Length: 304
Image (cartoon, rainbow, N blue to C red; front, top):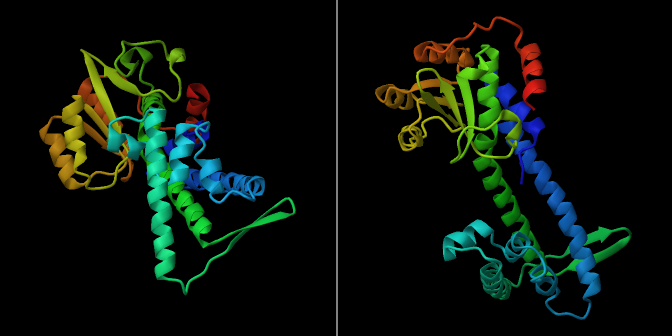
């Protein structure tokens, strides 16, 4: 599951312009989910045709131990993160056992539900290349459940990683907008010393530092307004600069009391407050006065 470079560019552009970036993540969730659904339906057709005489063809095909751990878990109605939380591990053996157990519980629950509400019927027909298969109500509900679990997994994964994947290019963009000299900022991989810019993979988690009389750690948080986590995150990570999508008045008061420089991007001329951050830290820069779209295009060409 990745946040593509084009989506990252779109998110950064919206953030710099003080616009809501969330539509970009939602669009990515929708695209990945719909592609999964189409691929999944095709596999359903092929699996049922291969197993006309197998009572529980879904379990045979979709909980097959030869599949990946992620696929087995999703097909059973779980995701790997849930299994990890339940068992403090997600080895393939544990995933297979947990998935089979959960699938049996789910199957039996659906069967009992249908027996108790036998006035409801459902048939799902899927056509693929001129061939169609029909799923009874048990099979249909299992398939619907799998789709729901997959969308939830995509949603959770992409929202949680959006900020992490955008942190490096967003901070680079802010620095380049104000022509901060390269020697005045640094990028470290998590837990590692400084490395060369061309050695950093787009998907790796990083720490970003502004440099003048020491290293000043920067924190990027794309969170909702009023999220109380902001000050806790800064304290835990010893951050000196906090860049956020939105901040409540309480957030700002917390950060001010900690002596942390902050920028709220979703406010009038929000990114321009980064100039104050540079001033307070004594970092050399030039005030940006150009055309924002043109400058962003030049920056993206350089950093992506």
